Length: 89
Image (cartoon, rainbow, N blue to C red; front, side, top):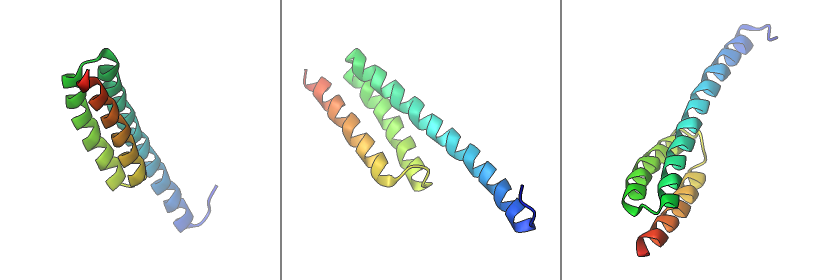
């Protein structure tokens, strides 16, 4: 257990940040799962709509530095490739 006032404050801040980051990561995962479900169902229109929402959530998480910006871009790119593939069929 921390003893100094500054160390106690850092512990409080870390707990708040951890909760905030967990919530953000959970919303990212949920949005990506919805998008992948639409892709697996073969519904290009729904997948595109879900991807738009997931893309916004990924960008927001990257701006907050919860996830690395390159990770957000990489995930968006991979999903966009899958959507393009099912749209061509």
